[in-house]
Image (cartoon, rainbow, N blue to C red; front, side):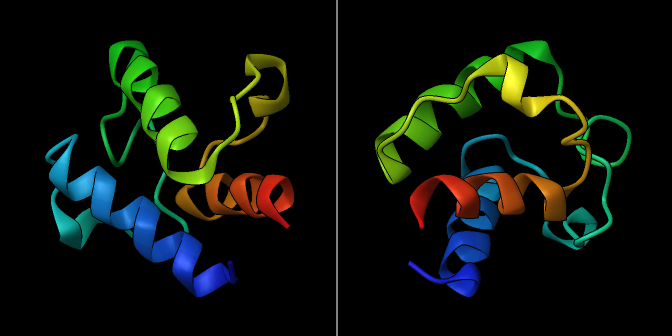
Length: 80
């Protein structure tokens, strides 16, 4: 799976499952501040990531992952 496919899949579930406005999703968008993702949303994200990409998110690996781009980087590092 390439970077573009990862970004599209992440963007799709953010829009469809978390109801985030598509216009807010940019590479530099802060997950918490710009996209409004809270701890409850993160629980949903963990389940969705496991279903779509086939791996479990480890919270300790998410330190410093604060933007859409960094989140996609993290996923890319796990699936490649």
